[in-house]
Length: 92
Image 1 (spheres, helix red, strand yellow):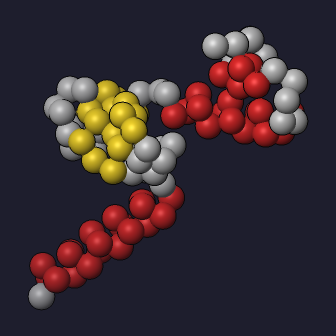
Image 2 (cartoon, helix red, strand yellow; image 1 turned 180 degrees about the vertical axis):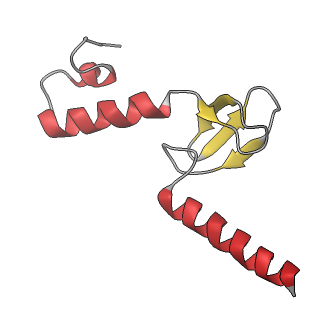
């Protein structure tokens, strides 16, 4: 797999597809391949195992998320809304 210091994982594309696209791909892939925080145990041991599938290597928790990031902006909003609704129901 071709890699260079400047373009990172998008080096495999060579001079094809344009600079902007290669930079976007490189940025997304670098973040995707990092360790992420587990929503259950809170430790940074989550890795992508497939499209939108993520697994914590410490506690073994497998969950769905975004295709390239474990938590999407929409997913965060939905979780916050659900938590707010649950809190209001508990107060009743």
